[in-house]
Length: 113
Length: 114
View (cartoon, chains in turn brown, orange):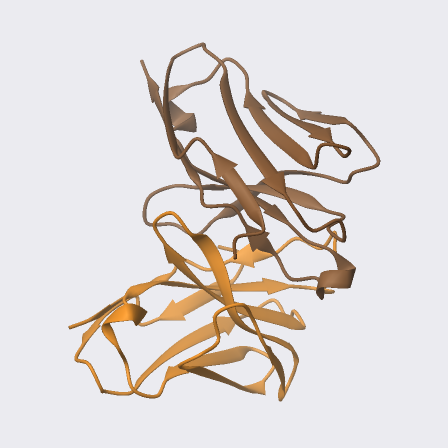
């Protein structure tokens, strides 16, 4: 049972374009939503995170949009660069869920120069 | 990788053999986690620990056991490896285990069970 569904599985974007990754969750006990970035051969690293009491969070070229009523959140990568080519995972965590992270299936992003 | 090492980094073994993976941290973080990563499934929690000798099951714990005798070491054991346990295994740590606490991941161990 996958409680966090992520789409698309992969996407290709031109340099300078916008990458958009979407996630949907089911468990309303989740109250913290991080995104992780993973390069080949490395472990995932925290990129940006949001709590559901805000609808948007921006850090540099990365923005999370959050829709609590729809139980959806998304990552936008503005002005995508070849160095952004990586796999991105959304996740959800909540104290009622034992503070355990539940991950989406991942999105492989390729930014073409 | 936030002071986390995993050993071995690569291992090939045969079905039915026992395998132990080690996670070592130098951060003195209380919480440690073992995940497996498979295509299309993201990362799935196997077991986690909230202190020395305190462990609990995750989402996919069947076939795995863990032990934590020291703060810095968290061992994952496959008692009798099966081909379905071929995967990349990641260890993670966090300081307080709260919902907003960041989890830091190690470099991973690629395990192949023939």
